[in-house]
Image (cartoon, rainbow, N blue to C red; front, side):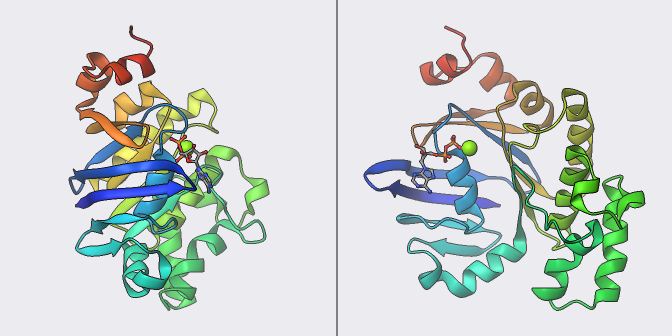
Length: 244
Ligand SMILES: Nc1ncnc2c1ncn2[C@@H]1O[C@H](COP(=O)(O)OP(=O)(O)O)[C@@H](O)[C@H]1O
Ligand SMILES: [Mg+2]
């Protein structure tokens, strides 16, 4: 379970997260949607401790991070990052490492697993994401969709309870979106929670248990995808979806 309690964040005098209080169920898929600049990426980064916030707290599976950043949360951040995986918009694979090398990096260097054990696990993960043939390849030898699969396998290698994804479809060819939808559904069926930022409403509809609309740093509407995307109540949601 993910709990946000009055999370506030400003960049300079610009409030980006405006006292967000929300609970997201375990083992569910929550999508964050809304206009550009609404705070979606910042919220995602706060959930993984990549970004500090100014007041409030975030609790994920019993680990609580408070305002004040690294200095105040060192031990908790280490625990949080073990539970929360992040798949970046541009995947951020290590260019000089193979797919397997990317996947075993954190298990070996952060968690202290043996290279042998981590490599065996990497092979299983590559099979899970449909990339078993490609373990010895470097990122530049892989397509965008394949790199994304490696990035997903890399995040799963740390056995997270929550996976955060920023715009997972934005750099994919349209015909690959269905593939990643199916992959993510398979991952969720094994018990992970997903929090996804996306602009692609057909994808959001297909993947989400719940949709949250972030506007000006606040969640202005949330609910089942057919409700929020089909018959939104808040005028800001309606404007975002081009409905009025
Ligand atoms: N590191 C930063 N420094 C200053 N302003 C930032 C930074 N990151 C984001 N912002 C600002 O915060 C606001 C929210 O950004 P973001 O979370 O990226 O929104 P979204 O992902 O919904 O488009 C924007 O106005 C953006 O310019
Ligand atoms: Mg963003």
